[in-house]
Image (cartoon, rainbow, N blue to C red):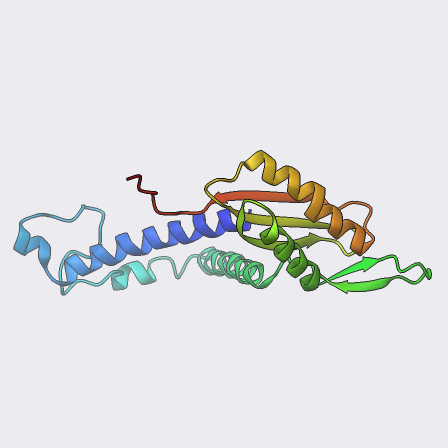
Length: 198
């Protein structure tokens, strides 16, 4: 979700800035006159001596009582959206610790990074997996694993997923004392050169 929102917001912002920047650059370099084309009638900046907002445009609504509240409200909304977006980038979904049952009634905390490293190493040792990445999300008492696996050319996805569940995830569940460890695995092919037959 966050990745999709990032891409949409960056794409939209980039497109707006690109269009405005190119239009201002064309007018600033007086390219419409040199290349014999005209800017749209609604565009205020048509030549090197024009300004984006005339003095009349900047002061037109100053005497109206609604103008400044609307300006501050729009700027406030844009500020809140920008702040939310910035905080969303800084927030990590990685699970730092996992609470496990130690048998003494108090429990213990296991570093999430340690279990991620074990999952990654075990997955890379599995037949048909060239490389692996692991990420733990969820809550301390109910972690979830997200794995990205690079499949070797000869690997069968069905066999890799079955082996992953039967060996790698089962071993992680047992060693961490978890009742269950839901996992999402994304399989990606590893690029390789075509083999030549002589």
